[in-house]
Image (cartoon, rainbow over all chains, first blue to last red; front, side, top):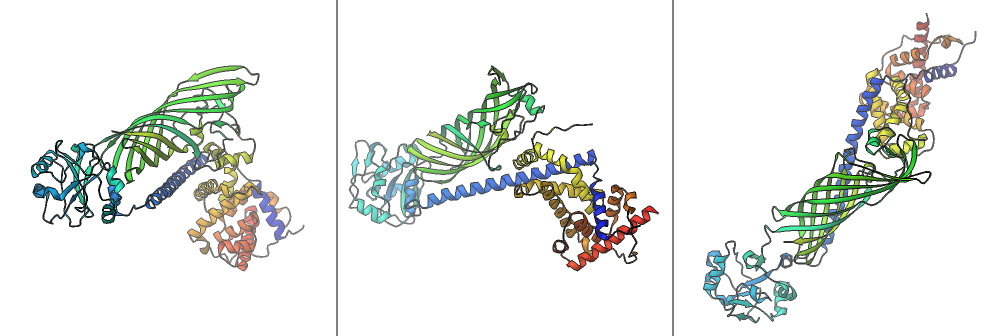
Length: 428
Length: 184
């Protein structure tokens, strides 16, 4: 009898253990898998939120940075430029005690209105107290604050148009204006009050402003969007393993077409839409509308219970209703930065498949898309006003498309999408 | 008898799909390795429930750390390391490694002859190992079954190499005693 050493003993024990792998009990296997799925879902959610927040923070920082380095942003007089269609009234030497109820007692000669449009001038050098009172009475929302600093001086010339009971200041001493207020005369000359019914007086930074109110206005935008299907969680994008397995429910919903392509071609989704924005406060708006999306994919697939291998050209059409909340972060005369978040529900209108088999036989089929597609989105936006009522805008955002048993598409393979809406916005 | 058909031509493709967070691929990978990894967990855990916990945590770690797998070397070997680390982490967390039983009464210098182990099955050895004092079991598993050196064990368990050798020697003796008792 030969005695075995420790090394041989260990080796034999290891071999015994290696040979004793028994299948895990199916109920245990299922229970553990549910726990794994739950854990992975939690981590994926965390990752999604973390990365989205990070991207938004970076983008917002960039935009704010750009905004901050814009000339004269921190100059209080710059606020003048941010107001839509602004005119300036100067109170030559107002007293601290003056209030809205006393505006009519100010000497008309101490007030000047800037406006290069005759019909919209508010008050001028020769405006009478009665005229001021009349103007005041017609505007319930007028208020006034007081200060002491002079904005303009008497060397500036003002021409009144008594016949029209309107007044216009022209040929202002630009040098004086610039020296005393920091506002370029050019801006003053461009100031324009288009609607006296929406005017209020405001005293700020030692200047008295007449501003056209923009509150409660309604914005309607009509946009044309292009959505770039850039996956965020998956890096790099790899479509070699479609989530559709032969015989799966997904495949059945995909008209029995099971993608097998290692390199499917998913075209960039194209959407067009129109949205209406309703202002809730100065900064907050809600928006809804209608959105049409077209998705195109080309891939190889097993068709009809894997009896045929075809090249599939697939078109999907969706009609959606978005709902978003918009918050204006920063705003000036020509530029607005805002953040937005919301969701969209889409109904698949039709799925069309053009098939070509290995013998080059062509066939087509189509099917309805029953379940609704839900998605959530968040992003930031930038609008540049080309004209007072028309602006160009760019809304980069992140959208997440939930798994709602939709046909195979770039959305099922890359549910987290980065997109950019480019459009024209009309302000009414 | 169920036959599972893989959607992936090989393990590399399966791993690639798991990297893309394809749930189906993850399920397939889980089904492929769950039995083997459960056996491993059973060796380190004090009972089956704890082993299930290790199995669940281990797979979650595998899927979330998959991008760290370089592709060099055995994928199963990489996974085993993950599961062992998961078990060790739990053991350390619960301070079990400093709570070993006193086993001074073990008989040493047991004459162990060839063919003794022929009469025992792997399942029985597995059961005996799960009954080992935790300190012995951990070091025995790491060194004998999973191939860690004493230096590596010392680093992972925060003990000295001498302590590791001692635990292994005593663990081996403990196991020999139990096997002999089983065969009486």
